Amino acid sequence: MPTVTIMPSGKTVDAAEGATLLQIIMSSGEEINHKCEGKAQCGSCHIYVHEGRKGISKIAREENERLDTIVGIGSKSRLACQAKILGTENVKVELLGFASGL
Image: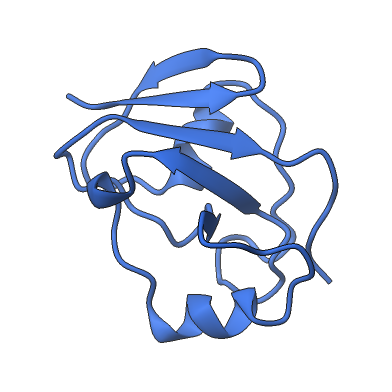
């Protein structure tokens, strides 16, 4: 079972295949904004994926369109509600210190 390391705390949790990064982060006890309940409508769960990007699902059109509206995105940006664990490798994410959604 792959693990997800959550920065900056360094907490590492087991990640079930098919679970979203939002579900995993919330189950770990870490705080993360998620205003639209995981529907890719607000962008508030914007995170950076530093390692293991091949271990999560590809960016779909809806997520890409939402990311295009957010200030401060980069090549490591994902919406935690849309990125699903594939079960192939460990993942390291960074929770951002600001609300990046609308």
